[in-house]
Length: 133
Image (tube, one colour):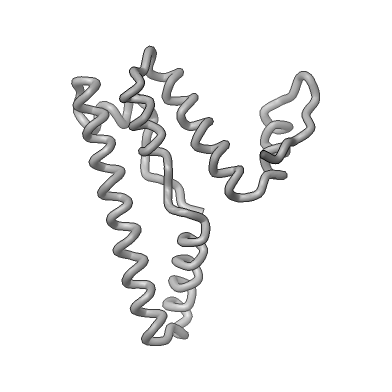
């Protein structure tokens, strides 16, 4: 695991600068852990099942998939997309939609465990649409 050298007392800006030194996979792991920590602080006493769901909810598609998706979208807008690339883009759109549907199902399961509605859960925990790089 890569390490980042830090001062004993750091500001959030310094912490962000340190995080910027991480490669993308490590940054994704750190992001998942921070989002889980934030959720745990917002909602007291998460059960193990709720914690497991939060980890799944915050886990996204790989950077490789998002890079290729972004590249193909750019080519689509520039009207330089080949037929083969168009097929690949359609496939990736399906992958993204399935991932979003899976996340929505996990959120609904978490709402059920907590005895609340999906909207109330997302509002109370500060959960919104997944940010894509």
